[in-house]
Image 1 (cartoon, each protein chain N blue to C red):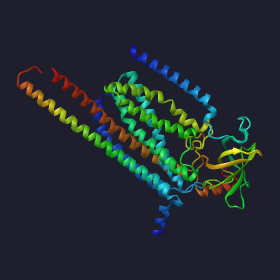
Image 2 (image 1 turned 180 degrees about the horizontal axis):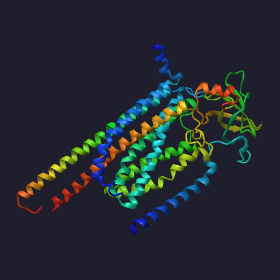
Image 3 (image 1 turned 45 degrees about the horizontal axis):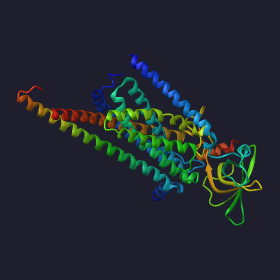
Image 4 (image 1 turned 45 degrees about the vertical axis):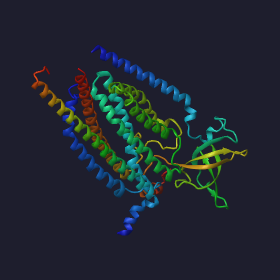
Length: 144
Length: 68
Length: 242
């Protein structure tokens, strides 16, 4: 019986030790584990022109423009406080739309415009049939 | 009817992805069942064989009057 | 504890329970497939690709559930020194690994049309990939020893240490910016899924779980019998040497 208690205590100590070590490691790696940065984090992260990173946020309503060449699109990405303009050439994912989440991979140019060469659509945790979405829209609760 | 079937199979244009995912699940789950049962049967057979061997040997040694 | 963990009792009990669990899995699977593929609506934004969720999410839950069970079994095996716990742990590993692979593959098939990528190194996907390698590592470690008992002991340590990864997977989408969206079902308050989609998901999850338990029971039987074979073989070799 005493041996069993001893083993339980040892196990509990090991679990606490490993858990703490893992938590500390993850906290130290915090920045490297971020898949993207919001417009408001650019300055704090010292992301300067010419440096590659992923920019994430919501596509501003009414900001998507397709240029005359039919390939280039421009839009604004916002975290609701700060906004960055994005230029992108290439195919867009099916979920890419105004008011939706987006992640662009690329770099800022000297004018502060984000030149993207890869576009990923992010979707939220809401799932609903089209009729429900329409009803919400009509009731004045946009789904985004 | 053929129209509805076609619509069902096309999955709004995402048929390859949706059916790909379900097909993959089906294949993997069937394989898992087959392999698990095969392994269990093989183990059961081996155990039976070894048990039989032990029983016959015990009988033999008892016949010889040896201590078990 | 010991009374229920007796290997021979387990063989008897599992033989009685198995047809019921397997039957339940079959019935739930049929109902779940009907709900998931026919009766449920497409998503307002994701269209019919949302149907991939009904296999992806249950597979993901089972990949976590499988590893958590292995960690619990390893703790029980370590504290109470009961051989059945270690054998059950080993029996769970290949099945948990398979469901982790299914989760990764179906996620890829969902990500390509919706996000525009098969794979990204975001925190959720990377931590699930690590889980997959933990399963493979466990299986390799357990079979790396000549003495099966020592292999099981080493594997139990890995199963316990690797459990650190489980909360990381769960909370990765909340702690860090990720491509993967935050949880929908376990969200506080109302789930973010419409009932017409939540039901198919829950029925499919129950079906997958029943299937998982069926296979773990079968595989644990396999492990117990294999253990008996090892003991008999060792006794035979000993007898022949005498």
